[in-house]
Length: 319
Length: 202
Image (cartoon, rainbow over all chains, first blue to last red; front, side):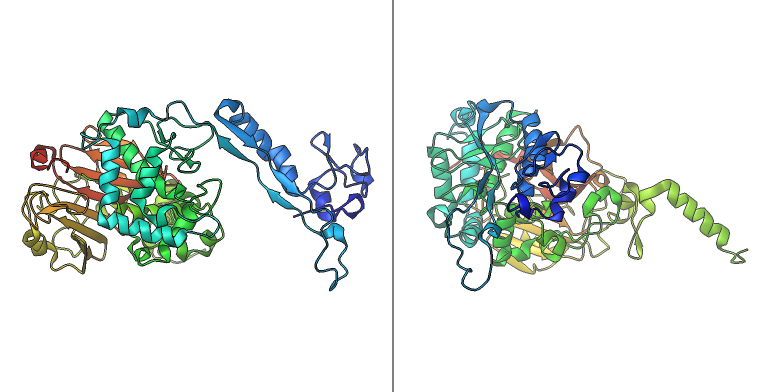
C-alpha cells in the first residue's frame, strides 16, 4: 500500500498516521519543516514512504534491534526492500487515465539470513549408528516406516509448488539423507529472538534445525532431537528451502494435508471451552478449517496443531 | 420488588459466579467446570460406559489401559474390550468412540517390522495403544506423578509438551492453549521391564 505517491498527493489517511502531512496540513504540526517530509517520532521522513516503511522504522526495526540485532555474528539482516517501478509503461494507460505515480510499489519485508552456529555438528558427531536410540537411528526408523513414508510423500507432493518444488519428489528418506550429508544439520542451541524448533536455510547448503535443549537425561534429549527433526524436516523440504519462504510453513502444510485423505485423521474436534483461560481461542473451533477467522490468519497456532497432530499419528517415534 | 421465590438464590449464584470467575462461565447450556470438576466429570469414565477410558478422577492415571498390557495382551483381548475395529491401517486398528479415538498397534510377528516397532513377540500382540480424547481435558485431570513423569517441552510446535513415564511405558502429550495445557494423546507402550523383548536393529 502506498500512501503518498508524491509530496502533493498525500492522502488524508496518512495524516492520521503522521504529524504533518507533506505540507498539506501545516496547522496540524507545529514541527512542520518541510513540505515534502512528514514529521514522525522526531524525524522527517520521505513523503513517499508507505505505512510499511513507517512500521519498519518505528516498530519492527527498533523491536528487532533491541532483541536480536545486537549479535550480528549469528546472522545477517537483509533490509526491507521497496521497488519503485521506474520508466515502466503502465499497461492500463490505454484503458484508463491513470497517472503513472499511482502505480503501487512492491514491498519485501526484511529478514535474517542466519549464519551457522558452531554447535551444529555436535549431535551427529556424538551419535553412533550402532546405538538404536541415537538421534539418527530413531529418525531413520521413523521415516522408513511405510506409514510415515506414505504420509510425508503425499503431503509434501501436495505442498510442492512450481516456485519451490519439493526435494526428491517428496521422498522423506532421501530428503533426510541430504540433510545429513550437508555441512549444517541440527543444533541444540537457539538463536536470539527465534523460537525453539526453528528450521532455516536450504537442505544441501545450510538447512538447519534448532532443537530444544532439555535439562533431562541424554536419552530424553536424543528422543527430543529426533522428534524435532521428524516434525521440522517437512518445513525445509523445498528445493529453495523453508522460512522465510512460506511454501512449507504450518499453514501450507496444513492445507496440503487437508487436501489429502489424511485430513480426516485430525483428532481434535469441537470447540475450545469458553473459559477465558483458553485465551483468544476460547470458544473457537479446534479445527482451523472450521473457523473463517483462522483462514484469514496464516500464523494462527491451530494450523500448526492441525499439521503436527496428524503427522505425529502417522510418524510416531519408536517406543 | 421481585416476588420470585428464587430471586435470592439467583442473587447468590450471580455473586458467587462473579467471585469464582471462570468456573462459572457457560459453554452453551453446559457449564464449564473447574479443573477438579473436569476430572470428576469429563474423566469420570468407567468400563460400564461407552467411552472406554479408565476412571482417573481424583486418582493417578492407571498404568494399564483396561488391563490391556503392551507386549502381553493380544488382539483378542483388545476386541473383548472394544469389539471389532472401525478401520485398520497398516498394523494399526482404529476405534472411534463417542469421546476418544483409540489406535492399537499390533505386532506383525517376532522381530518383524510393525510400522516403526520391532519386538520379539508373536503376531497380533499389542505393542502400543494411543488414546486421543475428543474432549478438552486439562493435564491436571490425569494427576500425573511428577516424580515418575519427565516433562519435556517440544521444539516444534513449541506449545506442545510430553510427559514420559519410562518405567510404565506411558507418554502423555499435551498442547498448551492460552493458560490451559490439555491432553492431546495418552500412549501406552512397552514397560521398562519388558525391554528385553526389543529386537536389535537390522
